[in-house]
Image 1 (tube, helix red, strand yellow):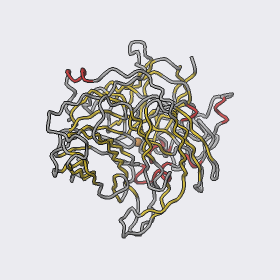
Image 2 (cartoon, helix red, strand yellow):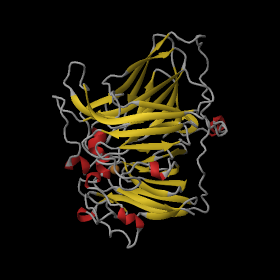
Image 3 (cartoon, helix red, strand yellow):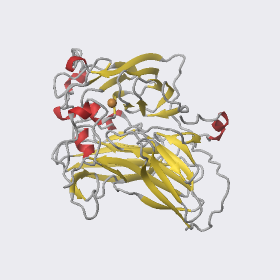
Image 4 (cartoon, protein in one colour):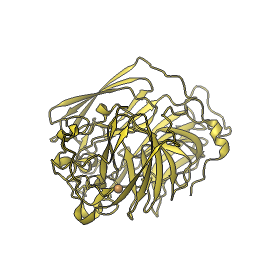
Length: 470
Ligand SMILES: [Cu+2]
C-alpha cells in the first residue's frame, strides 16, 4: 500500500501564482489521417495508424494563460472530434459528437478555441468509435506548463499505450465480446511514446520531471522507479503535496507527474510497471554528465512541490449527495425510458458509431444505448452550476473501472480499497467492489460521465449530466 502523505508535507505546496494572461496564442493544425508506422520495429511490417501528426502520440505544449486555437482537419474515412481530457474547457469545446458539437465529417474541419485554466499534464482523443480510433493511435499529449516554482532540469513525457497488432502488422479486433464483458481486451504490443523500449538520457544529479500517462484502452499500470528517489508531484495534472510513490494504480486515462533526482553520470534509472507479475520496463533513463552551464552537484532531495491548484472548492456541508452504482447490465440492458418530452436536448441524437458494442454495463441501471438513435437515455442527474455535489460511487462488478467526469477536476474524498493521499482527479479508479466519494462544484453544460475502459463505455457504462446555469 502506498505511504500516505505525511502531515508535514502539506506545507510544501506553494500558493498559486496570480492569474497570468500571457497574450500568447498557439495555432495548431491537427490533421486526423491514416499514416503508416513500423510499431513492430524498424525491420518489421508497416501498420496503418490513424494519428493527429506525422509521428504517433505527438506532444503539444503551451503555458498557463496561453490561448489555444486548434483546428482539426478530418482526413479519416469516418467522423471524429477532439475531447480535451481533463482540461476544464467550456462545454462547447468538450468534443463529444452530438452532445457538445456536431460530428466532424470526413473532409470537414472544426476549430477548438480555449485558454486552459490550469497547468498540468493532459491528453486529447476522439469521443466516438473510441476503441477503433484510439486503438489505431488517435491520441496526443497536452502539456500546460507554468506550475513549477523552480524549473526542473528535464521534462520527459512517458505516454504508455498498447497496440493490437498481429505479426504481419495488421489490426486485431479492438472490441471482443470476451474482453468487453470482463476487464477489456489487452493489446499485443506494449509501447512508451510508441516505442518498444523507450530510453533517454537525463542530466546527472538533476531534478527530472516525468509525466506518465496511461493512454491505453484497457491496462492498469502501477509505476515503480528504481535507481532514484522519486515523489509524486501531480495527479491527473493537479499538484499534490509531494509524497513518495507507493502502489499508485493508473487506470486508462489517468496521469501521474513524478519528480526524481537523477544519479551520478553513468548510473541508470529504471521506470517499471510493477502491476504484472513480471515488472515491465517502461523507460530506461541514463544519467549523463550535465550539459547545463553550471554542472549540478549531489545535494539533498527536497522537492518543493508545484503551485497549488485554483479549482473551485466544494462546500462539503451544503453539498447535495448523489449515488451511482456501476454494474453489469440486466438482461441485456434496460435501455432507458428515452428523453422527457419537449427536452431541447432530445434533438441531439446519438450516432451508431458512438456505441456499437451491445449492452453489457450500466450506471444506476441505465445503459448507454447501442446504436439506437431515438433512445438517448435521460441525464443521470440534473445539477445546478456553482453548487457543490458529493457523488458516492460504488463498483458492484469484479472488474476495475476508471470513472471519468468531463469538464471538472473532482476532489477524491475517500476510496475504500486504496490508501491514496487526498488529491484532485478527473478519472477515479474503482477497484472491484470498491466505493469512493468525490466532490466538485458543477460547471454549466452537458457533461459525459463514463468508464474509461473503452470497451466498457462502448457497451453501456456511460451517461451524462445536465448542469443548468444558476
Ligand atoms: Cu469499466
